[in-house]
Length: 182
Image (cartoon, rainbow, N blue to C red):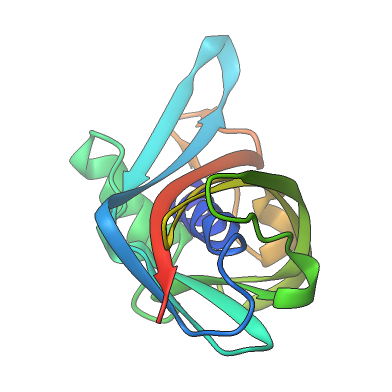
């Protein structure tokens, strides 16, 4: 579940760096969304997906991460994450919506970074969330990197536990992708 949340958050952060007056379109190489969870005795779980889309208009940027393709490298853990914790049958996506006014847009050949405040929706719960982002504009393409820190309990997600090993509810999400205004 943490993996899916992380992916969604990263995608949202990446989307924040797009142009101010157009609909966004993902372009170039596949995006990368990671979530990082930890537990006792140095346990580290990394979830990954390249499933991300963007939408929006001249007022809002929306990043959508379908959670059903998130993987951690262990199929049983992935199944538990999707079915028990994230409940992707009922809540298939994580979304991050950011007002365009909350984003600094770089000029061609330049870079902009900042903290973008928006609304993260996961597991049917919407909460105000801040994402840190950096965007570089090369021609008409924005290369975006973003990070977000989330506590899954804030979104009504049960803290994952298996055979007595419980992960921490705090996860970090990293996103990288390229997009351009249409």
